[in-house]
Length: 218
Image (cartoon, rainbow, N blue to C red):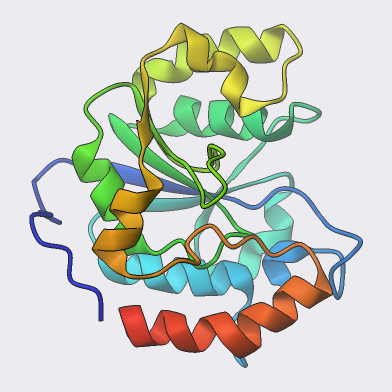
């Protein structure tokens, strides 16, 4: 199991976790990614929630979704996203909701981004946001830390019709989180594995899950 030295999980400072559950995929088994089974008994969303609830016991964990009725079985608070605003709208909805200064955001189709990695990022975020880069060197704006102070800039971009998250980065101080640092800390290279197709789901179940459990435990 991964051990991350130097991380204080209980600092007395509340953080909020937002799982972004918007966006269906016609290439998946039922076209509805959050509800696709990842393990024998857990959907992708259930898998993420169970892991984060274990690590962030005293902090808020919420789902951001288009229709809260579709998530009644998850025993979680759901805040409804605004229509036609894309993922940036989901960030805005959460930042309007939060009472925490630091907030971690994760897309539901990235189930192997571990709560240990989220702890590491929250602990190291000293600017208005901290965004990791993946193995290809691209930023991952849906596995990131954003402070509540980002809200005015996000609102301006949404009002301007922008949907891409990175459009507000030029208006705030965003740090890049080096992929090599996080990989070396956790010894796990599938943090950013994104599940959008049946083939990717098959690989996740057969190849990545065993390694995930080996590193982070069951």
